[in-house]
Image 1 (cartoon, rainbow, N blue to C red):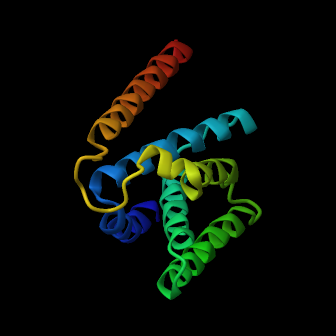
Image 2: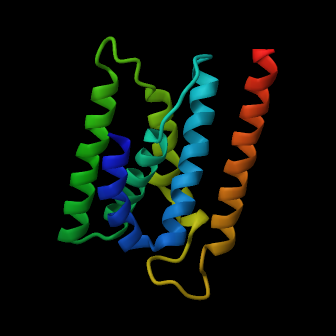
Image 3: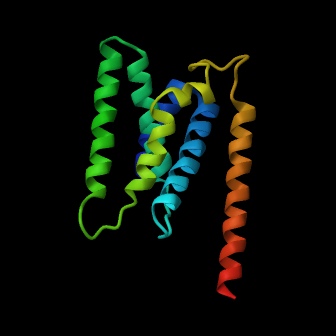
Length: 155
């Protein structure tokens, strides 16, 4: 399901923000989502839905930023998506991590998105390439630390 949503949503976010900015939003949202999940619960959390909620939040922020009929339509569409994800997470027996969803949504849904990548859309002198690389390296280090922790616990 996450791959399907990423296929559709990722293309839309990439078109509006550019590939580098989309990756920054994706990775920052993933880190924040998993952080909130770890603080909220001791249960392990897996998946890409926290990052996808960040992409949804970025599109909502785009709709808020552009006060015109197109911005209103974008905002309304993605607010519905966010509500559906949270409601789906409330269904009993599914064990969906809504803490990760909310944590992933928050950094991308408001001002922090514009602080991470202040330039909008067109690549140029304010390219987010370095920030994107930092996010990717931080994610790789996090996965390495998680692997080493699981290897230590398994012994």
